[in-house]
Length: 502
Image (tube, rainbow, N blue to C red; front, top):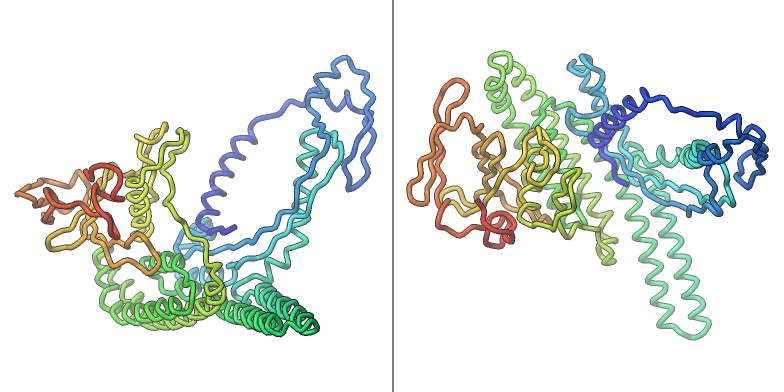
């Protein structure tokens, strides 16, 4: 179970509103307690059959509030819990109000980002086996909740032992113990083969045992090094005060290496990125600040640039250690051909409250690309198009999208939402990713577009901003050319399989 802090914040908001609505509703209990006052007490810690002597005339109505099950059995549940802190400003500490705006609060966020990450903590929920439970519904549910609560509380040390900042000692012990166990099993099999004169099988078993011990040791040691490095770099990202950098880091965390070569490649890339952004930030941050907040913004940009020139290269160096270590850790698993579970199809577009629709690859690719673009640029989350939903959409949604090969810009992807026009260019695809990253070339509100000029296969967009300054943007090959799919493939707009690109 992988839980992200930003998702947890959203769920808490949903459930707090739900509980607030339910708290105002009073439940009428009737006379059930009087009718069943002579129920014999149950033994502590067990649920079994009970004898009831009911004398009230409305016995049937009172029994409807009780639940009887012949046999209630829930098998043991084993899962691994992973918690990732948010790298942007949408974490749990944002609810502290004005305190979260103070510059010193970044150190609190940095500490929180370092110490709250949990990596694959093993959680075991023991089996439930109750014969003929006959209890009120609330008591039955309460006993079930208490059982699982005690299991989680008893296993709390596993959560602490799986903290990344500590190097995930639970994972270290687990990996090494699995390696030693495999080594002993295969070595024992090898000696049994030797007694029967099967020296070829003995050599194979001994080799498998040595490989199991080496794989467990490598996964444990380098997994701990990777966990500590990831925890450190998450804390450093908070100290840059750069929202764009933190959002880019959130996207980076989705690209995990599956073997040593990928780890070296990604580590080197992030080291170079940290060095370049740290040095160029001295000039780019004041410019960004001035464009957003004038002289005061430029002054803040100078501070961000000076901090970034120190923090970002160091974070890039730690990133290189983290991703290289993780690549080494995942290499034995990759070589054993177990690999990592990857998605084979993009999520289906399924609006809340609507019927399940047939899978549409074109819409799935378009919505996935625009959702990633929203996360990359810090835009509000996307909502489902009203054509696919039975509810009224109040946020931004994609009306249509298309892709083609521009004569000057290269591969271009265009999104038309209910609020704006977004023109992007495709960047080289990342290793192991089907969909390419996008870079925004133009994002203009629909009410700011003053004119569209079409000349042959070219479109010229004239727009005005809030200060009434005009600007022009030209696309070549919008009409009459071959429509491409982001990342390759052909035909029919995004996704290549679902009709015209619009």
